[in-house]
Length: 413
Image (cartoon, rainbow, N blue to C red; front, side, top):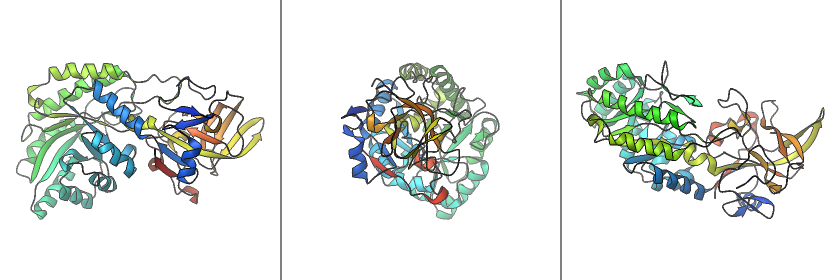
């Protein structure tokens, strides 16, 4: 929808509206959702927006590509259970996320477990459940094989590869150079040969180079290199790979200068690349693993203004929320330069900006800023502030126990 007159973006995330002057989510004003949930602070996720995003992806990605949801982006159980039937698999990074994934009824063979520091108890749980373990080192392979031998069963195992290239322009670079993630590409052939004779059923490769990328050119180039690397590594595999997970990295816009990803270009280029897929991986499922891109824009964080104060001519709106709930919006979750997330006054969403205010939380630290010098209508105690792009890496990526404040509510609209 077009900007109603305040905030720091020309266009709000698609799918939000106005009812009786208020921000509306899923066809209801936020005050109704807040009352139903029991108050603020509140993370509110719109399931219809998630379903729409998945449908958009299905429409442009090649039909042979399997779509997986990376639960780490948002592990809220109700949300994961909603998404699971809409995608082809789930990816987890802890035993807690594995427990959530198993409650969805997803086939174990379509659940993968990544992470550089899996405990033996987690490897044992993955073995018992029958999910795919993305091996991050030779040592982890040996530990999984020992557990499988002791249990008298075989484990599904793929190798997470640290490629010799990176996804340029990524918010977080997960591949290329020295990394704690995955096995360096040049070490993988020996690891594959060592797998022969172990109680491990080789499944394929997981190659993830970076995240939060808005450049179609960068994603297209990396997908091409990733598939070529997987084909080269397959020559030493004990059997043809069943799957090749080429990661994700699809970004969403957070700041005014950000341009949305040209998804159609990425889909068309991937289709053309799959038409010339190397024989070594021709029979493999090609998997794209996405988290933020599926859920990020479908969430909003709602927090109520407790106090309005002036300091040296600057307006501060003090809220009942803060970085202990929404660390990423405060700029303390990977940002080198602080950039505001889209922030609005949800209570008077249709009103034009009347002042510039800094939105802060209730914590005793200068880091607790949800929006620096944001154009807003005149904020008053009782107003509700909305922080958009809050569907991914919000609550569970935040230090909720810091200073002992209550945890926020979560609601799936």
